[in-house]
Image (cartoon, rainbow, N blue to C red; front, side):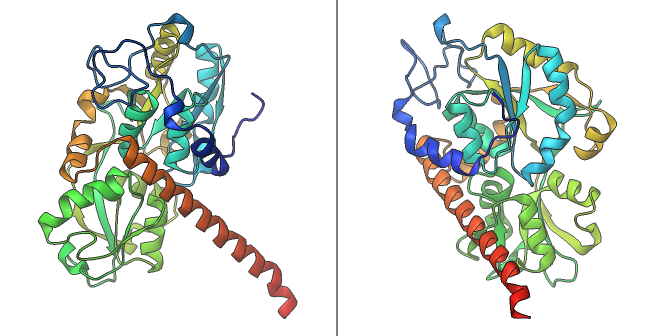
Length: 357
């Protein structure tokens, strides 16, 4: 593999068109799958896909491909994770490259298709990656005391009149994307109890990302937005926004941050080596600063640590299944196409502007 950063915009569309779910070969004899897609089996009932029992189906790639969740500008993470990928290359003895994704759909599809071996999935999409792509979460970022968690915080401008969630009836409230735990599912589960029901008391507007929601509130495009507190804190630390320009009018109990997972069908010795490399790594100072002060990866399991996330999905009847993911994939692709069109229009306007002077 010669490309270090792979294009993602057309990648998801191509996979959706050319690699239908039905083309995936299910495992042979399987007595239990739980919530997993038919391509996977969960005989030990740990809620993640078992490794294939047929040795011929185990993979030992010469190059490992890694991607991190696009909760912010994807280009940021390619640079932030560079020291770790260099370490992972040395630790595993296999060249490791970064795959830059621009949507959750592209990331999950890449692992399902076998093009992605290791990934950091956002909290909500982790469950889709587990059920539909055979992802096996094993770590979460953390520090010396514990792994990192975040809260859902509802941001408004500091100079706005809004003091509580019920004040947002009829206002413009941005959610991030349909599969996001903090940016969509948790608000749908918790807001009604505080007097504000999404899609009833206000029309949900999907911004396309946590950073876009924060910047939209800052610019006055949205009256409020539920976002992940760790993303907001990182944006403040980088100087993208000023904390004093915002107020938090509601926050949730803690949730785990992004999971780090490997594909279920990697050779067991390689999968174990990857996990140990994660656990042994200590973030250099710049990486720690960029990633919220975290300095290591903590062991985690999907069954235990993602139980609160699954509870939220159950509360709003949002199953992590194929039908829900197909719908969200289409929405993400359509949203990305709209953003591309807007960028092209802005570029055309900028090119034409000097000619009208």
